Image (cartoon, rainbow, N blue to C red; front, side, top):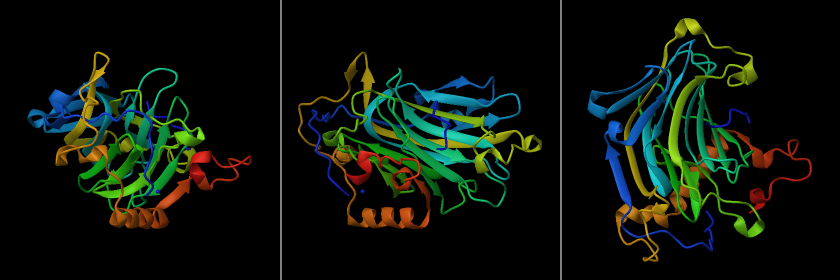
Length: 303
C-alpha cells in the first residue's frame, strides 16, 4: 500500500535494453476483466456491467482493489471522481507497486479536506524500497464534481504524471496536463524503477491521524459512507506474466501511435503547462526542503 507518510524536459539516457515490440497490450473498458476487489467486505463494487467501480469507507472499514495484470512500462489512464463534501481524514490512494522489501512504487494519494477547501494531491516515487520523493499539489478544479483522468506515463526514459500526470520517463498528468516528471538519474547513482513489474492498486481508507492538516482535523463519521468512483480504465502497456514481458526487444523504437509512449517526452507546450502547474499549484517539493536535507538535497534534484 502507498506510504501514508507526509511526507523537467531532459532526455533520459538509459543503458538498459528498451522493451518495445508490438505485442503491447491495449486494455480498455470492462473493469471486471481488469481488476479484482481485494478487501472491504462488500464496500467495493463493480457495477453497470463493468463500467463503474466504487469504493466506500465507513467507521468499520475502507475498501480496495488491484489489477489482474502486472505491468513493466506503459501509459495507464483512469478516470476518478473523489469523495465529495467533508472528506477530511480520508485518503484515496491510486498507485503502481511491486512486491518485496526493495519494491518500486509510483503514487497518487488524494488527501481529503473540509468542505470548500481544496484536495491535496500527494505524489511519491519509490525505487528499490526508497521513497522520500514527495511532491504535493492543490488541484485547479473540483475533483469531486465530475470524473477526471489521471495518468501515469512510464517508459524506459522517464515517468510523467498527468492530470491527465509521472515521467521514467515517469510522468504524472491530470486531464492531459503534466504535473510531475521524474527523470532517470542512474548515471549519478539514483535507482530508477525499470526492472520490477508492478500491479495497479487503489484503496479508500481512514488516515485522520495525518492526512488533513497533519491530523488536526478528524474524520466526521456522520458523513459516512464516503465514496470514490472509477471508470474508463485504459492501459497501453507491456504486461508481465510467467517471468516474461508481452513486449520484446526486437524493435529498437516505436513504430505506431499506440506505442508512442515508449519514447514520449514532454514537448515545449507540455513543458510550459508543467511549469504553470508547479508555479501555481505545487505546495510541497522535497527538492526544495533544505531543512529536511541539511546535508544536501538528493542528487536527482540537480540532475
